[in-house]
Length: 383
Image (cartoon, rainbow, N blue to C red):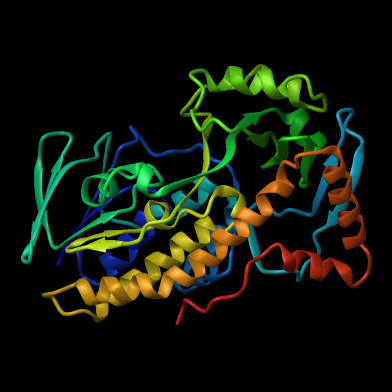
């Protein structure tokens, strides 16, 4: 059996890992010109972390993790307004950069990646699928996997235009990493955030001389600005704290990640011998906090169903994969929509209420209840 995986991010690479070990021939294509080192801090836990453990990847994840010891808010002068210590035992969480998780997965995959390339056309029948790539080559396979993100080219070609599936959540998000030993030391292994109505900026030290930055802005217009770095400086540069310093050297894409905050709601995840995976069909938004975990878990579920399928019709396996994943994706998406307004509150009154909630959560016995409230309901995906 042969699969063409479009998208060499977390979801696509995790699936390639499984398929190779099941004896499949895997080809990978990625529209980015090279492996994407940039990214943002993620909390990796739940079913995805369990799957990674069963894949034997926990030792490498431990090597690249950056533990968070405290969550807190500051004002424009850098004065702390509220905080919550993250105690051991809240939950098994591995905090790390998105690019580091992608690299840990990629290290274990044999299939080379054809960078700077994506799918140009798809033709399929009961016997297989033919894929024409943007480099002009044609390839035949038993399965085409669209793991190419929110703006999936495979989904567009097979299922329809993007506007049918992408739900804009009224915010823009940006992230990048700077190298600055002094700033890294000042922020430390604590996730610090500054919020004013409709804006949030966060920072967290990663290593001895790097600082990961995250920005969220309420914006009714989904259009991404022509100059994302200038837009960040315009909206955040006068807020104080460390922001004038870090925004002075703000890069442009691809070093700067800048996008809409969106979710993907796709009625169908497969059509014939084409299946969607990861953000292409189940994006929950960065601020739902479970995207990477769901991507790795979905790859585990899809691979398991494919292993159990006959070499002929793959449709029943693809249907079972979607049936297992849909409930948890819907749950996390709902959680993300509820949680997002608390990340960039709409008023100073709401900011004050959030700070009081965080102070109350630091009381004995209340901390665990608060942390549990930051996760949607549990689902058993890894069996």
